[in-house]
Image 1 (cartoon, rainbow, N blue to C red):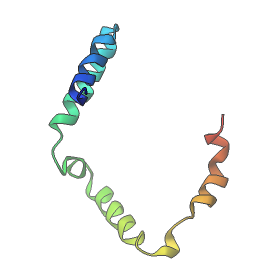
Image 2: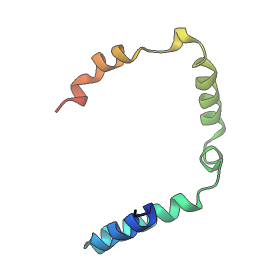
Image 3: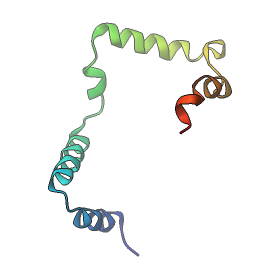
Length: 80
């Protein structure tokens, strides 16, 4: 049984495009160095306030939109 690490190595070996490999490497490097809370630290005070307000308002069911309503409204962009 192969491990995820082995599958990851195999995938890398199969990619011929060096630029694509470099892009994946940068992404992987960024993801492994990410620290908890770093996204929040990058927000302005106004953005943090808006995010907190949105979170608080999301606990009120009257503020939530049903999946069906969103799907009907945006389905034209979801279908090809």
